[in-house]
Length: 118
View 1 (cartoon, helix red, strand yellow):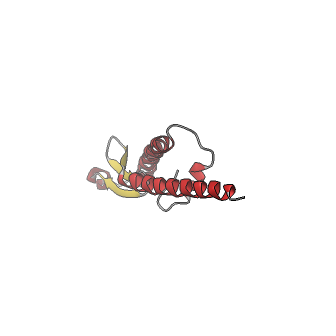
View 2 (cartoon, helix red, strand yellow):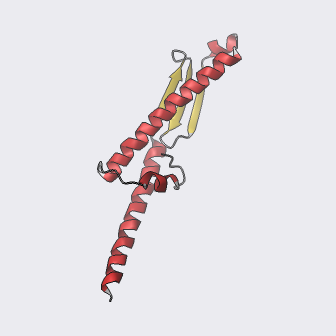
View 3 (spheres, helix red, strand yellow):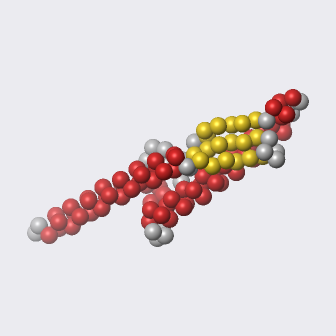
């Protein structure tokens, strides 16, 4: 009768451990910085591994003769590049967390943590 309670306690302990590891993962991702560039480095977007934009740097040359469409394209390109790198960092962190084992639904669970976006 009480054997089931022991199993439940074990599951709860594992869930707490995983929760702690996921919290750690979120902190690691927020500490990791990636950069997307466009226009030969004239525009840079710095982002952390949780896909939060930290900085946007625009070379003054781009602002001397502003071309709205060009600037918009460069921003889009640099942001997309930074997002790709942040997602790669997320994937690497997930591999480290799970030991390379694919766990269905773990990304969804992680996405519910503040600051963690798969």
